[in-house]
Image (cartoon, rainbow, N blue to C red; front, side, top):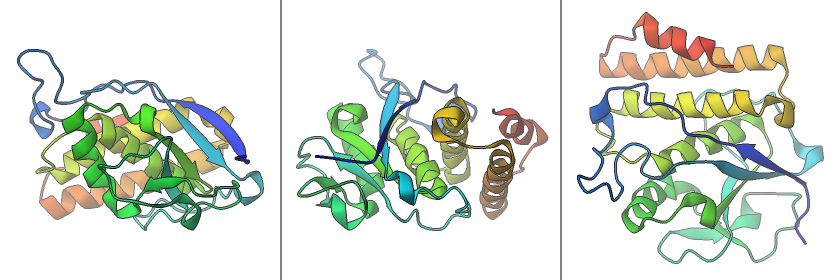
Length: 212
């Protein structure tokens, strides 16, 4: 039997905050596709209580000990045993999305119209892992060609921050750590825009600052 703390995180859709062309345009017949091709609503998150660590910085490093566990076998996606990446939850033979396959899941879930919540729950025992899990959850629901990385990632940053803010009490995220987290995300977003030579305007910066 699975153990650890089980929390249902509210992940309501977040408005588009980047240029419309960053994501695929909606299908002409309304059959899906594009930004918000599938409306997000909630994500099941599990964490071994004694392992929770909210001090891990959001600095672009790999989200160690984060994995999307499959509720049922998803044979069209790369997979690994979940227990190799998540600990203290009593995992046995459960499969998980291979950590390197976030892009595969983003493309294949969209192509097959498979709703993410029907196939995944999230295991994450530290704040960096939880942040990137929510960031990837946004990717799964918002498909695009990934040709404008800074803007693409900014939309997912916005969603992850909005969802963390909405669930702060359930997560146990204090004011000081929240403010530091926003600063860390701002630094990452600023760096991406600088690398692409795109102006990082004050309006977008202010929007991130006001989340939560």
